[in-house]
Image 1: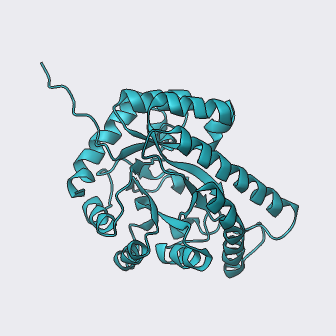
Image 2: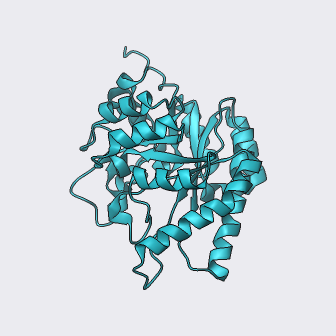
Length: 291
């Protein structure tokens, strides 16, 4: 008879993007059945059931909330479209506060922000970054009042044109420090593993207590036709998880660690299988470097 599998590490969180096609109820059930203690939510599945029902589901799950993904996309020029984005981000702040309050003790009211890419026809990267900074500064008092941390996620430079004009952890920290103490950063291995300044910038983030979320997945080659989907289970690609985990730990981060994988083959696999494989990969690559 085979031994009963060990429960997942208690700092491991299942980000819903890893089982993209699951409803919120299904995703929470999968995480709970697989032994996870924490869950990273996405706004679209929350919207499908409505915030009130989502709060009920999170409470019933008994899971901690590790973050809500995602808001942001701040680079539009002044006008109606930009105002609509700001209004949507205010709603996202309220959603984060409500879901974190509904989660088990230790839940984190962290809203992940993606800066956004260049508007159509725009080549002014500096201007786009400046508009993102202005938007986050406008939202900061709203977040502070709600008890929500706005967490800027730098994205790999391959996405600067279409998704994220904030490309390095250093740039994200520059922006956070400009705005105020309630602004944090996301350390996503997929986006930061390549950066030669990563050790210094993680130490800097730790010194100011700004690491709000730590997300893990691997960088896979050859790249998919959609490079956003070139992620994989930890240990299947090129990232040194032991080194990065030690640096994040040394920087003082002791919160949940989300497995967030965008990959078509993984999305198409049975949810329970994905949750189990993610937990096994975490145990092999990340957990050994945790205190």
